[in-house]
Amino acid sequence: GRVEPGVLWFKRGIHKTYKALIQARPVVLMRDSNRDHEFGNEDKLHKGMFAINLHGASNTDKVGRSSAGCVVVKLLSWSKEFKELMAWIYGHDQKEFPCVILDHKSLSLFIGGMK
Image (cartoon, rainbow, N blue to C red; front, top):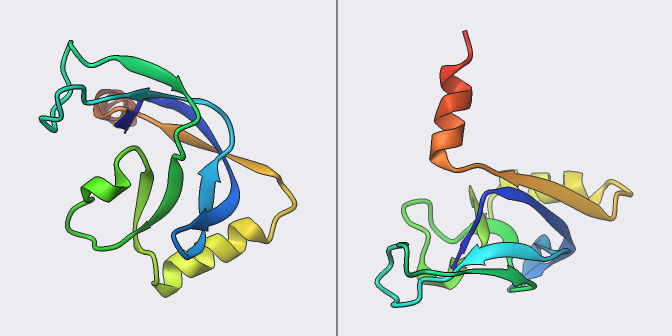
């Protein structure tokens, strides 16, 4: 699955064995219905709770299938930097945390509009 652009809401939780953020509210997800690892017109949108997490990477070269649907930060999950990020987030009283997902077209329009 692939999370569609929009605002995702996360809360504190555990991904596998380490601190991360877990899905707090329903998200819109596109499923790769024929499992060809490409998204097309035949693939449907679904809204719901899918155990979407925001977590660190297991390697920085490629996101594997086990992270399908998740938001993966390009920091190794065991790195000092990722642990510091989680400590900073966990250090706040806020119960839920927004994460904005943009598609590459929107992002390039935003960056291209900056002078």
